[in-house]
Length: 260
Ligand SMILES: Nc1ncnc2c1ncn2[C@@H]1O[C@H](COP(=O)(O)OP(=O)(O)O)[C@@H](O)[C@H]1O
Ligand SMILES: [Mg+2]
Figure 1: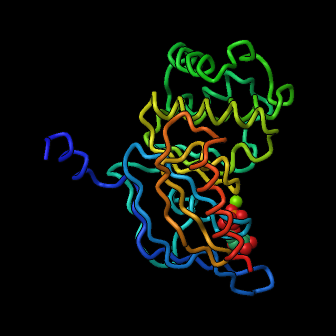
Figure 2: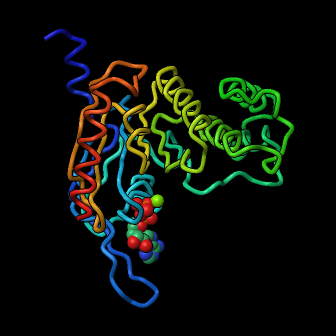
Figure 3: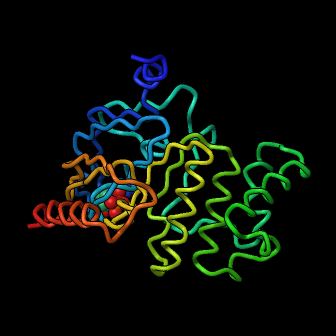
């Protein structure tokens, strides 16, 4: 074994979930089992997509990983020192920019909270806005932006915190196909360039296959992982290749069999 392999093999997972359960009580007092016995490990630098139908507990799982929600049972272990705001950034499912702040000041918000001085935070934000293709819009306000531009801003806002682990909850769900494809490509480029670990939730199989190293397929409620698929396809992914469509159909079959 080469020393390089050794380092990789002995690296602790960035995220490890063991026997995670979560039940909510609905307003009517009915117990809703959202997650049941979730076991998964994400390696440092991996791009993992979670896919499953609406209501299967995907958001709940990200919230638990972020520490915003607690599991009823089980263990959640993050690489030493990671927590929300400290090496862990989260792009939420619902649009979360501050409407009263310009694009630039949305991206600098977290740095301002950390008391990074203005010159430095503007420099970091402008670099990121350049990377997400929004340099010309730093003075615009969220309501003046398209959906895709808002998500670019949200991504820059998350990256400004220099995360190692990036959680993303269906961030491109509301975009048209061509904008969505552009953002997927951009995210994959940033993931590589910044050596991020990404946990990306989607209900779109195509999206998971275009970006993920691995895809975890969830069942319907209560969410359990029924498949853990390595996506061993060359990048950039070719949607028209036979292997791509084969895996696509296989996942679709898994999901629809689960729905029946
Ligand atoms: N705070 C909460 N209180 C009550 N029920 C909740 C709460 N959060 C989520 N749920 C329920 O748990 C289930 C999983 O929700 P969620 O994690 O949002 O699923 P997904 O993101 O996969 O659509 C759903 O049935 C949802 O209604
Ligand atoms: Mg959700």
